[in-house]
Length: 239
Image (tube, rainbow, N blue to C red; front, side, top):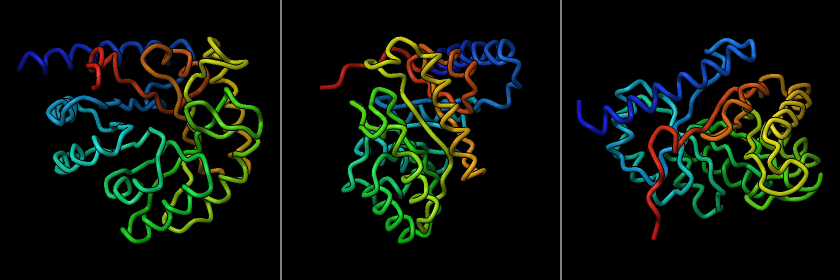
């Protein structure tokens, strides 16, 4: 086993132990929570090692990095999640490899994703990104739609050819009423998910929690956690 593989295996084991313990504490089954490893800034060789170690879900946030990495790893049994703010001029590329876009936050993006998915003859999963640092009808500092905009956007996704409404995503906010209150933020997301599922019962995916706060996300009921640093190490600086 290479040094890097041994390092990633040890890190994964620690994260797995954290998720399992959080599930026990929350009275949940371990299989209710899916680990998504955020591989942004790390090379395709790391993605390949992660796949060998049993990881099946990986995430990226920049198309210019993700597209060549996904192409290099096209032979692997992976589900690719796009988690960054997505500009419409990158949509066609992202639809070429992503299985799920977790950052849907405006109607123009829904239209572009639908057009590209139909052209590519693919079904693309979509999560509405919820901004808990925004007012009910506002927008978040890091993307996302306020709680008042979820219903309309969800209906657009549900009706759009080539798209599948999978659920909701959030990032613990740095400002606003939920700043430094990760547990409360994730519980609010779960309440919004309950509301969404009344109209769209199959949209039961809740993506929340990262390396620092995955326990709070599991406690709140998240179905997916997005972990990067705790698995891959501190990210190298860009630029």
